[in-house]
Amino acid sequence: MFEMFASKTDSDLYIPLKFDLGIGNAAQITTVEGNTTDLVAQTLAVGEGQFTPGISAANEGFVQASGSRFTLNGNPWYCAGTNAYYAGLKYIMSDNEVSVMMKEHARRGATVLRVFAFSNFDSVPDPMMPDFGVYNEEAIRRLDLALVAAAENGIRLIMVMGNYWPFLGNMQDYVDRGLGPGKHYSLFYSDPTIRGYYKDWLRTIITRTNSITGQKYSEDPTVFSWELANEPRIGKNWERNQGLQPGRIICNWVAEMSAYIKSLDSNHLVCVGDEGMRTNGSTAEPHSWINTGYDGVDFQCNLAVPDVDFGTVHAYPDQWGIPPSGVEWMKDNFFGDRARIARSLNKPLIFEEYGMRAEGYLPSREPLFDFFHETANAAGYACTLVWAVSHYSTDAGSRGTLFGSNDGQGYVFGYDGDGSRSVLAQYQYQNSRNVGDTPPVPPPPTVCKDVPPPGNSYTCAQQEQWGKCGESWMAGYCLVTCGKCLSTAPPPPPPPACKDVPPPGNSYTCAQQKEWGKCRESWMAGYCQVTCGTCKISLPYPLP
Image 1 (cartoon, rainbow, N blue to C red):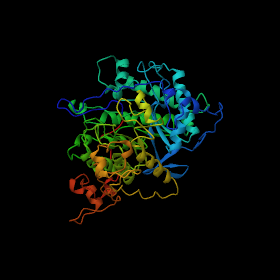
Image 2: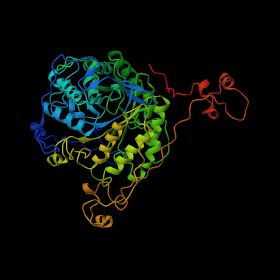
Image 3: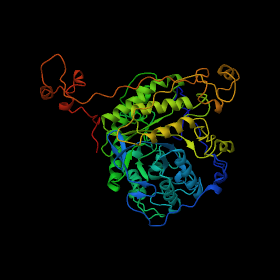
Image 4: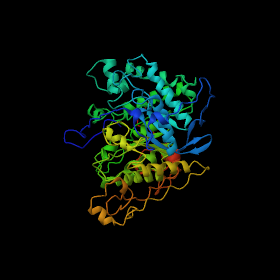
């Protein structure tokens, strides 16, 4: 996320919205408890060089992928948290605030934060990489601090290494600076010089030694995973218009970069950071563009890359032109479909970004977030990360700061704001799953009822008549009257086990069908899967 979209047009699929950081004096913003950050911040008690490989303060052991779920120290592990891209950016928060932020998120139940581990060129004050091969040690030390503060509070970090969107120095900036202006950003993925520059950054960060603890990043269990980029894509049917197969360029880049990361660090997981778009998915209308290659991303191919350990899915129906009445379409055609692909590849899947603007879509985020959480839990997603809940009060938003409700796009809210009830319930649910060896049954769908808010004698009809449905204190109440219900159908059944069942209507064996070259015939779909090698999804084209 960062460059979001308003609506569809005839000339293009979206109208971009300008993102304004609106950063104020964050150091004096009031927290939920009413204390200013300079009063509640505490000094991190970590001595230089005091570490044990595989142990970092409250974090012990590396998160691993085991089938369709994560494990930690041999036990199933589920997680929930939020996107906090700014945690590693020195120009946004003071050092003390980093500690305050981690402590507050941990207190609320978050176990994973997603942070941007890069800032390039002249995109921001004090960038980590002012130019290719030039690294700003003072700026990079903020990543050191973020890792230490996270470790102190039992939080793990997804470290995002690049960005498609024009923020913090993106893929187009790499191409402009490395090859000259006027060239298409797809060269970020395909040009050997640009790929070399990107590998230099990967190596610089992944092999770095933390200046506070003396521990290598590659040996720090606080790192949950390395993420190749935030929402990589080649949009607007560019590949198809060039006569190319959509998704091929990025998938080859994913294969190269994920293998490179694994050559530097064998301890940590690797993910892509894509939104879950496909090139050959369901063409069911009205939102088939998500599945037909418009954005040049092939989720199936990316996840099938051997060095990619788990899949990522993002969802913003308000920005994708999907009205509230059409969200149900996403359940099977998007969320369920990606879960089935992940299961077929025997890899975990996380719901890495989701959100809703404060205005213009639904009166409250709560029913949409309930739908997202229930759908993801039922489909077997192993982790959920909202975009975004802030550790500050929503009151901060009135002053135009990054962390409050007024974040320039309206997606950020506080732990006392609209959306927090559902997010906190999801934190609690995911944490409750981290006991025992058998994953529990997902919670039942929320029943949509007309329950008036406590503390007064007014009916739901009166609240609706007086225009109170959109008030924050009405979140979760009077759902029927206020039109906040989202339908919840049962989740799709899991795919059948891979078996060697010959097609009906003949006496030929699977071995004979394979020998005669019949495995790829349409009438063989679902049959002779073991013999024909169709149990797992194959890459649609060779990878380097």
